[in-house]
Amino acid sequence: MDCITNNPLSDEQIHDVIMGNASPEIIEHIKQCEFCAERVHEARVMPALARLLYRAKCPSSDELRNYHFDLVDPETNEVVNKHLKLCRFCRQDLQEMIEFIEAEEPRVELPTFDITAPNFMFAKPASGERVALRGGSSVRGVDSGPLMFEAQTATIFLDLETTAKGYILRGQVMDQDDMELWSEATVEIWQDGYQIDTIQADDMGSFDYLLEEAGMIDIHVIATDKTSIIISDIEYKD
Amino acid sequence: MTIQSLPLQDVADKCYENTKSYYEKKISDPKWCFELFRRALRLGEQDAFTHTYSIFKPQVERWARTYANYKTINPETEDFAHDALIKFWLNLKGEKFDKFPRLNALLAYLKACVFTVVRDHDDEPDLIIIDDLERIIGINPSLDKNINTDDLLDFVEKALNDGDLMTQFELWIIYDMKPSAIIDEVDGGDDAQEISRMRQKIKRHLQKDKNLRVFLDDRLPPITT
Image 1 (tube, rainbow over the protein chains, first blue to last red):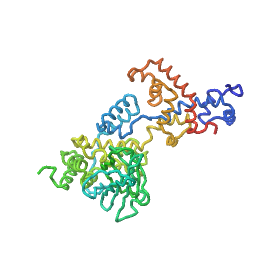
Image 2: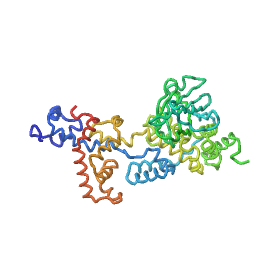
Image 3: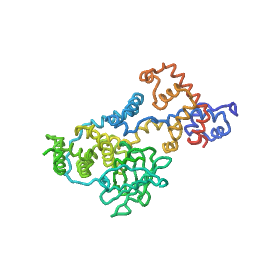
Image 4: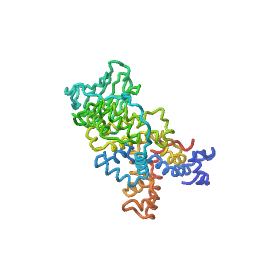
């Protein structure tokens, strides 16, 4: 296959096409000429891959931090260790984090001690004792029923249903003082200190989330006014 | 009476006084704040966390402001201190607290949480590298959301169909390693001539692969507009 005009585009013209600087005549030529269109494609494959795969294998900044503080499991530790040997971007990130931690602290005057409650609360099991959330199926009739947690005036209900795909966690946050507060709240799902997903509750403060394997999660529910509740160490299993 | 059995308010008052002394360069005793953190993190006591939050949030905010690009990342819209303290609590609650036997180690971790929270809002380091590539291929970051990198790597792996070439591809494209760096830093790395030969081969395979072409053409902006 050759150029339809026997006058194929020069490398410089192909570069102009990729940079979006080509003249209408050249663009028209590419539309007509398979040979030159192919050369344009070939010229942009490697830069496109480099852009799209940029840092594709890098650990998250949270993983890198926890690696540095020896908070990751041995398997992750080995993966990050090997990665760091190859990845100058992560080595640089890690170095910058260490420099940030070690930077001299400005000695400043501490504000007057004024207890300001954080705008987040820990939820405690309403029964006082922490139990695992057990999956059941309404079809099999073995649903163990919801767990209830309390955080000041808010009540959180969590239930688990086992399906072929995994576990569906169903939750609802209600507040006796302000029924609207948890409407369309943001629900962050955390595992082992990492945020693994974010979903949004509906207008009733209800949410569903699919969990693939039995395990333990933390849930951080953030209301529209930024008040938030952490329900920690929720163990779920069959 | 041991420090563990003292009322929370006494521990919190002492923690505040000692933190104040530390900043005034006077003698300070870290055991009070450590005990406050222990109650908040190890025992999960809400009131203890309220005290640590009150005492350390101003410090956490100051740390965030020392981040190099702080002013360029729209700090008014984000509560970095809040996010860092949540991250800190969720990572060190329960038994993980035991890995931090001293206050300075706990505060170093808290400071690292501040760094990662602020850093995750700072695109500047990435943009320096990406800008050049974006100019070349005319795509913008929003396009990334439509591309699953695992899928893309699968296409590449199938196109190359060779473990050594795939390794070389990763060193070249993902890790952005120059041949000299591969020779110096990778165990069993090939010589420069072999690396160059493999890179040419990778380029040929990927440029000609029809499946990869369809994958990229579906996602990159059309060339002829």
